[in-house]
Image 1 (tube, rainbow, N blue to C red):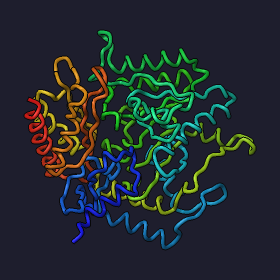
Image 2 (image 1 turned 90 degrees about the vertical axis):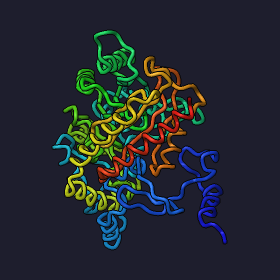
Image 3 (image 1 turned 60 degrees about the vertical axis):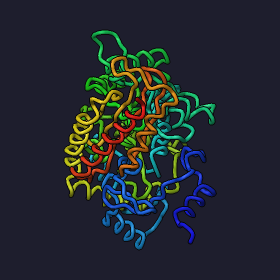
Length: 462
């Protein structure tokens, strides 16, 4: 009898090109066939805690019938219509109203895309449009941060800065993107008396002055780094950044693609620092991954600039599926679930339980450099060879990969990131970002699995 899992794996290897594709990673792929709440079910019947919410996006958990029914009802009524100017449908209109309301009116209007990279592409183009509409066409550069991830289309890849791996086979990059050091408290090597946030903000301002503020359109950053290592800034960082952008007439673009819709225990991550952006990009958790949807929200000043130009200078940017009625209907149902089930508060509570558990069980291991977390369900453990010097594990040690494999053996599925080089570059990092519906028992099981896997890896290294 043919093993159906083996047949699926063979078909996967033969016909499917994966994100970040290389066949070395697909020799024995996990084929998922089901999901319930915070649990993923593989084709062989094994069940795993979804330690990364799919890909940071399944916020309300797997198997939510409310979202399925919302999609089905909208498909039966109107599956698709054009969202180009002069044509619309009810769900995206209602969703745009709802999203603006969630910002407390800080944002004024919404443009919908299919995902996060398209959202950031739209933001970068809109920043250039805005300054041209304002009579400052030289303001075209975008400043981004080391360790930032903003997508992998050609323009967003040029903003992403997580080492050369994302660039090397696709260069040359799009011109006009400049990178600055990020706020990375654990790896900070600054002057005495200056916080990591102050140093990073100073580096941003120095870069603006060097490039010339008259050439810089926008600064883009995630409130908390996601794929770059779940790096939390110091509390002084974001207010300083906002002040710098305002003084130098530069748009602040908050990439909330991971941090939005409850991931940090609030609707949007930047609100933890009482800072308002000029453009907010979003995706992932807006539909909890059930259907593709992303977008950007813009301030009133930007919307007014878009509306004030002559028709010949209109905002000529578009996607076929912008304002897709089915995706918008699912997003509305998703927001209902988050509100009705109190998932913002629950994520905050479970996030504290998660980071405390990781600190208590992994904090004293010889290769635990730092346990990060505390704002909702975004936590990470950074691994080093020597805690005192923060010396990273040697290349080829593959501790992150071994830890990921150990977690899989113990029923937890997540991602890791290998070391990026010698200190102060990031070390091996393992990520934890389960669905917002995760239970206290599941958090405890995840922490227990992490402890057992880490101890097994530590024993193998000795």
